[in-house]
Image (cartoon, rainbow, N blue to C red):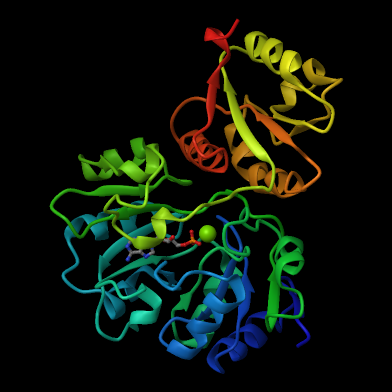
Length: 344
Ligand code: AMP
Ligand code: MG
């Protein structure tokens, strides 16, 4: 199959993409978080194609994308006030809310769960595609399963050229990490995945928040998780990644001491001069965390190279979107973290 390349600025793009969605095809869509691999979320056969193209296990649920916050009531029921409060505060935006699903949502979309993750993305062309298609778009990140997520149309083509119907190019994703996911189906709100909306911002609206264990620690196969897909390996380049924490100076000392030819350093732009002999790659500025979230997956993709043995990574500290960057890097490193302050 030939993959159509549809620039967002082209006036026909939303119509063409919506027609493909309506006829059961696959369209990669830009969003402010990452690029998604989209299909009609109400069509089981279309949704199956997403799992096949990504090589995604079928017990890993998809997020339903809507064009307007009001559409939430078409697909969810027993909606608590907190959901409307979150939608009011953060939609359109990088927040997914997990709610009880109405029966109109196929089991294949929710991976057999009785709940569904729903989000109104902050991307004009994608909301227009959803509106014109007249159906919600189910979309996970557009990467091949297990690989770093896609934040440009070029990443999507790298993984799927010739295997999907179209890609809409809306430029690089502004946030760069996947949406924050909050589950509102239990007594207390639960953070399942950090993202562009920080835990502090959620607390301001909800007044309460539990952080799920999957956010902070490696989940093993016997743990009970909210969605089975949370157990899968994520974001990992082929090389070993280790996070080196501690002050700029101590970390540089540790890394330069252990660095061997063929290794790489993933660091902040401000640190590049410290690693001149270590083939460094910067993913953004420590002083502006939004550049780190925006640059993280492109950098992890560049480091997804079998000839690289070890990647030493620097990770920002703090809350907000830095919390999401920490989470993705820790997962890429399988929670392998060294504190340079404690090393000799
Ligand atoms: P992706 O966008 O590729 O990260 O995939 C969507 C993620 O959303 C899944 O991996 C799940 O962890 C999460 N998700 C989607 N629907 C639900 C749900 N009903 N309950 C819990 N988590 C969900
Ligand atoms: Mg994903």
